[in-house]
Image (cartoon, protein in one colour):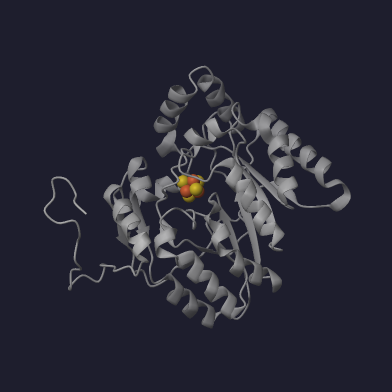
Length: 335
Ligand code: SF4
């Protein structure tokens, strides 16, 4: 292979660098990996802990685990973009192109589980997507599922990527032991909107197919309609819930879009560029849901918003889901 304008086409390992990673890839995947690395930078995090206790009182989770930081999916509203600044990187393209991997995660999780007395579920994908494209090469999420299965320990996953179907064998086995739940995020059924809102995620069709595949193997699956973008996707709520329910989702959740202060300028420009006729209304309605700002960081209201428009979304969501599940009493809530 030749790379135009370069002498060599590969980087041999640096013997003194503990952050150097040599991946053991199939020959078929190696070429893809090399192409992948030409447009992204991969960084290695050698932290000694990867499971974190969650302090937010309105998330309802105790432990979170994210084997990657940064996310190539590139969702414009992603609040995890803000955390990329702690590395000295931008919330914009850097977040999508500088990906931090934690190759020690399976070993560290094993160590964590050996110390655990109670089986409190660990949530994966809460900050960044654990099935984002780099997972194809590192397989950290798959190796973590193997650890959870070995320890018979409960895990919850949320993703927008159909790559999760690759691990249906492990997820099915975890489900047999009652140890897993999966949430697939579906924000819109409109591929045109999906492509600009969440550019490198799986298509709508692939996500619904993922719900079908997983539920078909006995994995409890829910749909996460998050975030609902007021003035853009809110009217789709009944259709999204129906499509997800028909595919096999038996739980449903939503959040209302909030735009962190660090993303306000980017998001406003994005809305004006992609939805010039609707941008003002979208921004006005987001503000209406958050007391006049584009976000409201107060616990317990930040996800569902406040005011008449937020209440309308809540009602639309609840009524639509109830109509589908009838008296089954299946769960639907904000957050
Ligand atoms: S998939 Fe999740 S983590 Fe990735 S960019 Fe989108 S919202 Fe952020």
